[in-house]
Length: 336
Image 1 (spheres, rainbow, N blue to C red):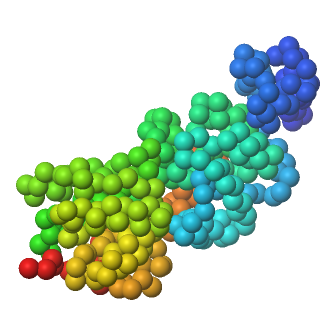
Image 2: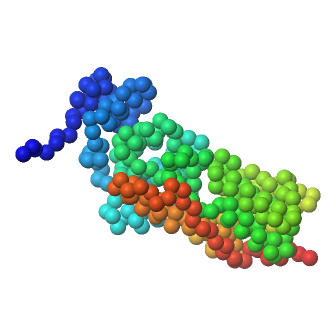
Image 3: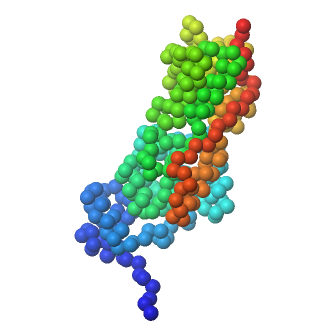
């Protein structure tokens, strides 16, 4: 009777790839200072020898890493969703701040490799081919929440139905009788922001209204962007009677700009947001908004990480959860 199959050693991998043990270790741990040709040789050796990374001991216990571009109120809601699943499984959550919408800096992937989480959830982000290879070499599955760009077909993503949400916000205002509706956008490099703007335009066009470029102002989902955007809109010779702020934070910034001009919400200007963060109910007047299910988005992403960790295929590579209109006090018919 034969004994149990022994796991190939790192020395055997290095020998097969014709590299040093230290170089093989760098590839295994996702270090950046290895040429692409060398990395490919080591990865081929890992595969051919059946070197399994799944059984490697994790230095900090089982972790799920959540990588944010920046922290904000929506990040808190997403973390609640992650932890609602992770805690039941006895898994800890660690947060990494990437610091840029366009591409995460090299340090975030180094930190992930050091901690060896069971999976990574990236928010407002994307992954380069190199970063995907680094994660896959260590057998670390990943999911992207609201990807920054257009993700590759093999990258699982989760978000809300942003096009539907943007359209629903505008249809609500149209239903109240508004025809001159401004919008404060999100960052144009974010897929969700582009979809919300497309929904805004589509709803106007369906009502026979040609979108007016002067009513569309750039933003970045922040309160400062909301203040600047609403100031720009209200300074027009023919200002809008309603504003669709594409995040609740932008809506609160718009409140400050509108009320600072001595105007009333919703009597003079209606405002609708997007997210339905807890602060929406605390605003004065309370904020009408489009609710995206942040807790469900995050819990779905976490359950998907667990499926991938167990080598189970995702039920869906692309998941979009429905949005809902939450009507409060900040929207009303325009003044006659």
